[in-house]
Image (cartoon, rainbow, N blue to C red; front, side, top):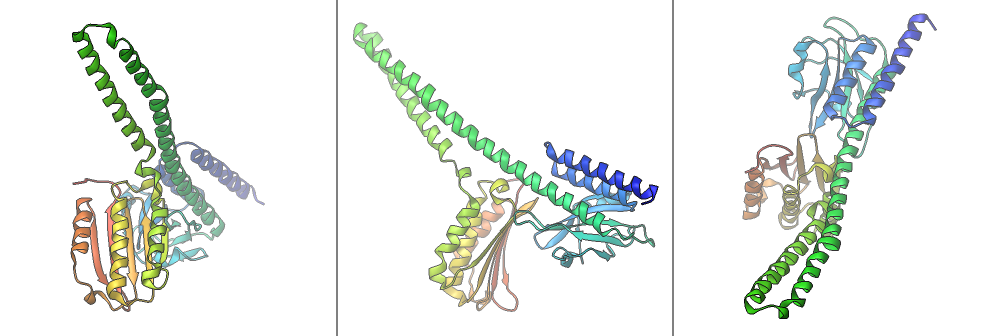
Length: 360
């Protein structure tokens, strides 16, 4: 091994340790992906490094490190590379959307059932060539996957912390506050006969107020202990799809992708379930289908439900009130509903709702 190789290997160890240390703390997902892209570019001597993530059926630049003019592409979609997400090899490809990039060495992110797919690449300058560094690119792709998994775990941990806080508050309200109020009410009742009529009237009003406060607190405790956040959207989807096995005559295929229970807002969950229910009901009534797929995906920016069948097609499905209501409710959440023909035949109903943005 040459001295130059030894220096390069030592630098790679240092970078790996730096990224691992970064991911052990609390971090922003975008910062982590930018760090990985930057260190990959530096270690490989490439012109640019990037992480691309799937946004349902498209790839988009999630992080891009290199010359400043490349930053305008962050958040934009890139075409022609989607087939590489499920590849099991490192490929050399061109990025036609970016004229200032030469050939790129591309590796798919390692698969994970609970996170979005994507690619990692380092690219040469225009007219240049990328060095054969398959293992290096694979290693940084694995680091990007680790960052996504750790970020998801942080979100889920935060949700668990919120639920634990709700439990603690509910216990304190019941064991401390309500019991003290109840004891105070008993004390007031005990001195009721010891005072004149005017004071008795005031005591009666105070006792009534205490009783009303206890009822309000018990209602609040119930809400804390039975909050919708405790329900699992993933579990509700499985239950819903199972309910339609009998009416359909077969079991629909359900695929859940992304951290649904961690990131989908509570007000959006009923709309997702309603869209799936309405779609399955339409299939039962009109489609004459023999197969149905239900795909629900949470990305960094939106949640998408997509129900597709192989039945008689969209022409047989009228825009009934249920579909109109779905469309109106989706639009109220800043999203959209789309009903279209499936290929080669059948119907697709898709609901998209942003995970951030204005709510009307």
